[in-house]
Length: 120
Image 1 (spheres, rainbow, N blue to C red):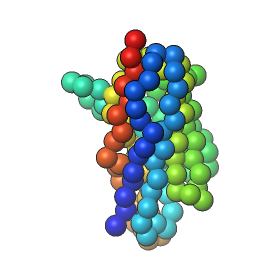
Image 2: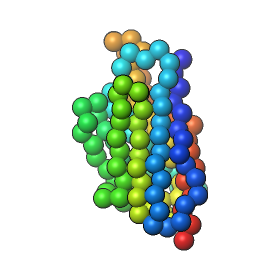
Image 3: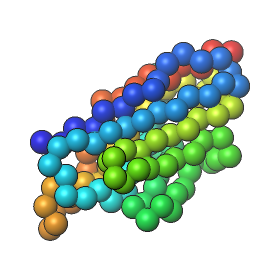
Image 4: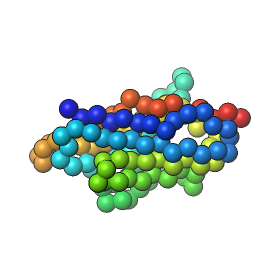
């Protein structure tokens, strides 16, 4: 059984910062790519940022230069540092991870989400 648990969301004023964390737990052999997505009310879930196991990252254009994804492989944890937040960043933020429970099988897991609200 694998669980991804996000934390760090909350209410912040425009221009402020938040740091989200996502911890993977369970009988994990290894973790490949990790990513953050978000879903605003009435909108589809959208990609925010991704990082490979080797540390390569890419971002949605809407967050480039403001958000930074990072990971600590030893702790099975991925982070999202969010700076210069805007009201349009308000959403539920979800992490996902490609996880191997055994060497020969890879599956995608999602966390339950953490709410980020940016007030103007």
